[in-house]
Length: 387
Image 1 (cartoon, one colour):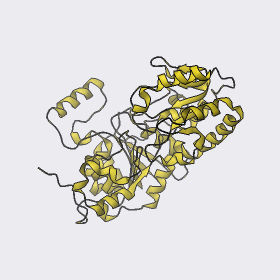
Image 2: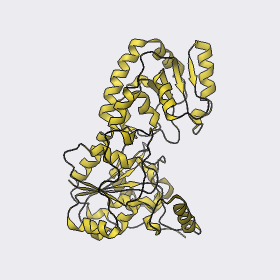
Image 3: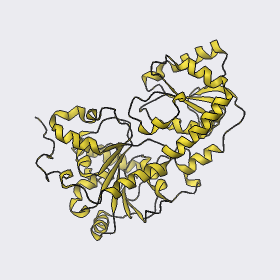
Image 4: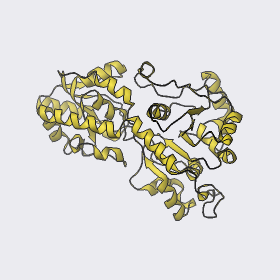
């Protein structure tokens, strides 16, 4: 199965997730990429280029004309579109500002607003796509689907979203009155969870940095960008002083090398949600051999349902100290949890698993339903803007 991967023009780990996740999948032939000239992946550790990963510039499409020709030729059996912030309705000064930013960064060769994000090309390629199934991968922190993204949701067979509310109707809350209840039900059925996870090879590389001797009982480093984090440093200091625990509390921003070393040197890594519940630190702690203590999911983090319950504490911190003391004092329990967490990560957090689910969704939908395309059904009509 040959795929076309539409890339965004801003940092988005979904691109290496798809490329690295599918690199050893025998069901995949060639993964073409459009547009070219963009370095969009977040190289979290500066290690990805040094691992056995594919080049991020393989099989690049040079122009929109070439991409349309490729789609029409029948050489593509599925499209994966990564999605990030964009707005199809230009605002005063927006075009000039974005153009100046691109010139300053030398990052993006196009000028049209509709070319800001690769996924938006789908809205202009209906004639070229024909019956090719499309999957959207949305890794943004927000837990709603922007009004501008509804058109993408309508035309795709599956919309994989990182931060997903338990009540799917809340995805459309800001503009729900402009959608029929039947359409909300149909659109919600397409949305599926996808966690941040971790690159398979990167996890194995970090696992080699684990330390048998632990210099601290618990480690915390993070910005105060969520209410649960505001008083967390003081809470940890108070508990550590009262219980005689060795606390490693980062003072300021750490280099990633130092950050990894200090996680690997701690028995427990406190991992509290930030801009979104899902957090890189959740998987990093597991890989580095430190048991993560995570607040209970405030979103539908489906992959984490299979994780050991011992690592989660209530969002009001009412059981935090009790669970912390059990984990720090019981070496045998931590060893057993580490074994279970390693198995959990390989089964649910590895990028190969995520990318495989995206591929399965494409294979299960050889052609989008006509009702998914705006205008094909009176019940599926574009949002009517008021005023």
